[in-house]
Amino acid sequence: MSTIPYIIIDERKGCNDKDEKYIDYSSAPEEKLKLTLLKELHYCMEYHCFFDNSDDEYDDGDEDEYEDEDIKLTCSECDCIVMSKKFITEVNGSLFCFACNPSETIGEYITKELFDNFMKFLNKNDEICDILYFKDNKWNKFVIE
Image (cartoon, rainbow, N blue to C red):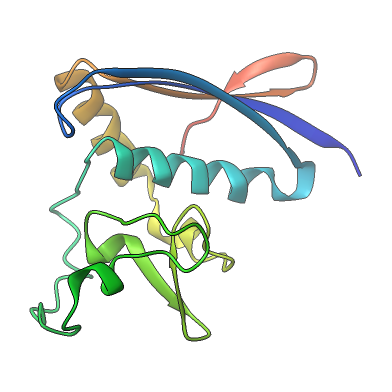
């Protein structure tokens, strides 16, 4: 089983009132690379405070579903607090952010349209989020087609 290295180059502004730049790297088994990169991409969307308003799937109008907002938005795995209930998923009674979500439903959530909207959002806000992976002896930019 071969592993594929990947790098995330990220520069964000605005949602936490300070500029942040970082480079992160890891690797994933080749058969799980796409799912891993989708999760990384979704985590970046959250961290850039990107909300796709065209997706009404999560707007059920029931804002009072939980009494304590922090419980509703806290990941059971990493204890991060996500910014919107659409970024937390319940799996077998536990709540997960998309970065920790053990299910493969994230591939259904991140579409080409959502990816394109995120790229436009980054350009508009002068931010960067590039995910590169090393395969076939070259670095490839991860995109949703």
